[in-house]
Image (cartoon, rainbow, N blue to C red; front, side, top):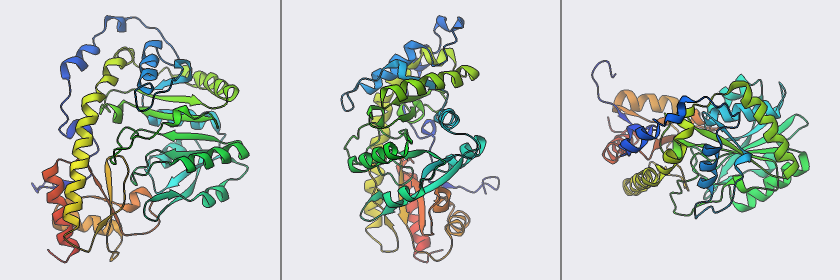
Length: 370
């Protein structure tokens, strides 16, 4: 379609560098020109200065707790962080419990590490909840960890306090670890910041995050694993992670030296993206209120909205029809492992005029327009 010169409204935008964010270009580029980068100082967990910058991130007012820089292991991405933790916890054929629906990345990472994924369900009833009975039922002698995405992508649901307590109890009873993906933690669309799992002490916990979403800088390859939990378990885990990291030494010196400046970019970036997402959400709700064929499911945080649509065909067929007939690109629910049809996922960081135009075309299609 693009090759033929047709305009396509892309409602799947996830790249903040192409969403109209105004970056402090001078400060970012200057931070990458530190002369210290000419010295090679291989630190398996990452340079101390960079880990201290990450620790400072967790001391911000609405989190306000101390993370020991020695409990942090820097990685180039959360994907690499997952790989390190999977390798730490699992032998080939061991199992990790993952939420369903959720982001499709886990399957590829598990395959690369010879790990088996076992789903537990997220249920929707006036909001999303973890189906704790299905999670407990999925645990077996080969289970090594439970993944939580806080908030989940694409459901936008945070793990609440009661669920966190239940997860800690299950981990304690079954000798499991928690792996908490918090890349969207700083984007509470409902205005209520949630606590990070990096402060969790009741179970061995590996919290993953990074610059990609925190500062809207996915090209600046800096992420981390924060280990917490019972002291003996956490210290042993960090020591073993350090061996894994020392095998690869993947971190770039210029990026690590620039970490304080790059993390500071979140102040402007997050404000812009939150305003964009919340404004788009208001427009979306206004437009949906004028019709009856499509509704939005409740969302607490993140960059995505989940639309419930009539099940007249598979989600994939609907997405293809929207693309061919309306020139609108939206993600079908099956991309995120929804157990049944009737879902579309759209990005809330899409430029507002494009989102409204694309939603208008989707609603026209659902209501029988051509």
